[in-house]
Amino acid sequence: MQPYSKIIFVGKDCVLFKDQLLKKMGTSKISFAPQSFAYPQALVLGLLGEKKPIAEINSFVPHYLRLTQAETQWLKNHRETDHEPYVEKI
Image (tube, rainbow, N blue to C red; front, side):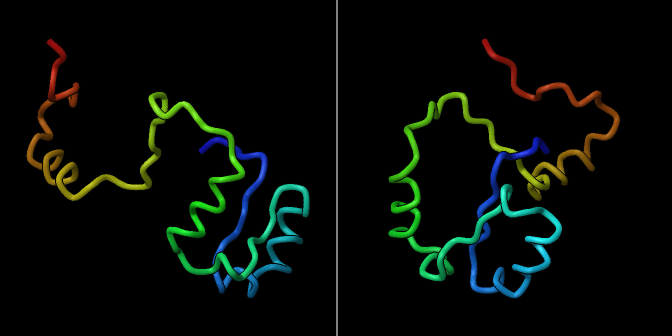
């Protein structure tokens, strides 16, 4: 995972670990969102996004933490292949 310039911690429980996080990571790399942002809400997401510049969405590539169940099952059933892309562009 690539390093990020700043990490914002969100949630009601992040304050429990605030001192430990600040000691480990320093104040220049992390910040804590206000408690009004503690629970996921569409309004809060909109307010956070309002302050960001519009990004080029066509170049966005998600970074998944794990494979989906379908991908895991497919790989388990197709171990003998070299796992090249299953779908080819025409």
